[in-house]
Image 1 (tube, rainbow, N blue to C red):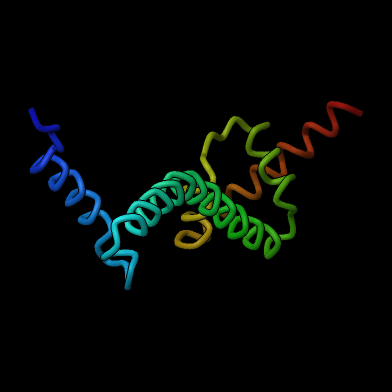
Image 2: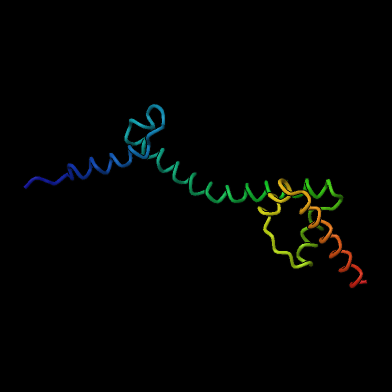
Length: 125
């Protein structure tokens, strides 16, 4: 009895890989071995970068908040500490949006944070 070689199933499996390699140029979408390498590499990059995007956005928000704090004469770290002391629970994404779109509210947050830091320093002294 002849050895079974998977026929249609093998072709279908390869076609799934080739579909994932669409958009590549040259051998990376036409040659089976290069397609496998390209798809695996793309998968590892996608997995890594799904986590990296979160880091990048947080860094962007912190930079924006820091710039807005600098314009108002307070350091970023003191501002965040002041918000924690004042029990204001806003994440950095929302703080960044407030700093960009609603400067009056951000000014109030800065004043609240400054007052909380000063009160904390007086209590410690």
